[in-house]
Image (tube, rainbow, N blue to C red; front, side, top):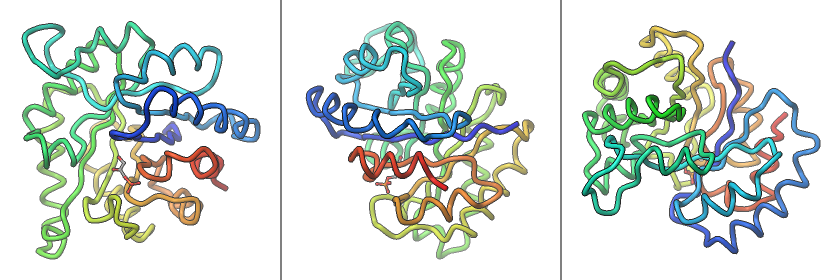
Length: 241
Ligand code: 13P
């Protein structure tokens, strides 16, 4: 049984005050959300504590955007899994393309982070996806298979979410065709040993396209950037039809 998981990735947006304002507008719109959908907010580290306090008793799950592979140590600027679990974080994004592109994240460090997250009972959301150049060169499949093969060495596929995020569709408004996202996600599933891993699509998911995306048989959820920042648009996305 594959879970439907709609996650917002706030990236480097929102102060604590802005996060709490978002919650006020968002929570009231979840009365109509079917019970079988998991709603996750992956927020900046500085807003995790106050959101955690304000999400008590709510159905919204808290996620972080990165985790280090050591549980403590001299790693300036990093965050350790026990620091996240202590405050009720359940999910963590690992290997987002922005981490790979701007911060030197490799398949090897992604693999280490995934395993540490799982050891701490966090559910990692592993991001994979190709650039426009790789797509144009017909390298989409080989690149993604390589990211999966290297990233998933020794990783427990019973506590894992994967997000297919074509880089050319992130923040561009240029969504991958729903049928194409479905095709690639089907191929990703064929590479896995556990057929029940939830696989999300990410890249310019919006209120206007979420229904079509979620109607695809292989797509189990969405990882949403820009459109998760406004209560109204993210509520429309989690309440997809
Ligand atoms: P956008 O929804 O802004 O394209 O971002 C997608 C993303 O990177 C989510 O992780």
